[in-house]
Length: 284
Ligand code: RP5
Ligand code: MG
Ligand code: MG
Image 1 (cartoon, rainbow, N blue to C red):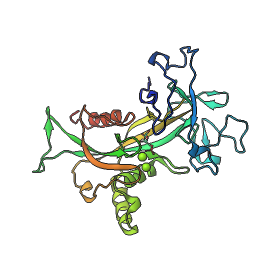
Image 2: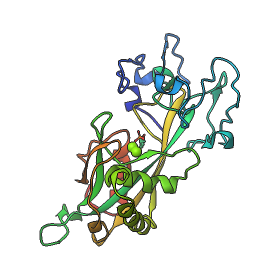
Image 3: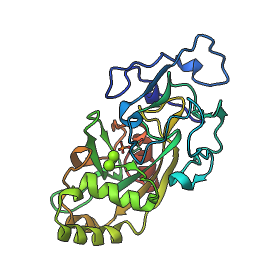
Image 4: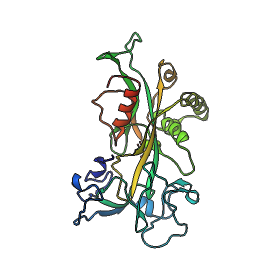
């Protein structure tokens, strides 16, 4: 069962646009909502020509040069249009959000019609005191994970990012962690090489902790975020000593954040971190 709440936030992020209010009982498409008048919004950034490579053409105004292949790998656009939630419906040729109504049609800030794929690294270590012993709460060791503060909304989040056209999820996990938590974009070629090698090691053994629909505030009735979250756990605490966390790209700050039930994070990132805590039998 899937539900969204953050995708119903009336103020559409980073704009003055307001969603049409959808009371929770009307989210489900199966519930008739005759008064539903969703606002139609797609950011200028993806409509203006030339289009960025991560953005699709407008498909509601007539046939396009290269038709989009929904529910399949679309090689013409170098993008995966399959959904982790299963096959999605098309209504008048346009994908329909598998969870339900959002109060907005069009793509909002998202580039793709249908699923927009992202990847979220959950990098963890045990919290230790000054003598190097694990910190214990209620009989369980306390975890820490690498969190970034997003520049777009100032909310704390996992250092995740969109899968670029033609790129893989595995590579995106490393790339986004490097860019957002290590500021790799502003390091010298040499520094990057050494970071890349260490990351290669660390990111070798990951555990998939979540795959599916993301309750992202940018979602619309026709475009939505999906992600795969992978946990990389540094049990000895030695591997990450090599790195200096430094925020970069779309991150304003970065830090090791303590894991507990009090976490408040972007989208449904709390659920991903909670899953990691449970798997590692850590304090929550
Ligand atoms: C969320 O947005 C995903 O879980 C991921 O963390 C992020 C990807 O978008 P950008 O960070 O590139 O904006 O839905
Ligand atoms: Mg990024
Ligand atoms: Mg990001």
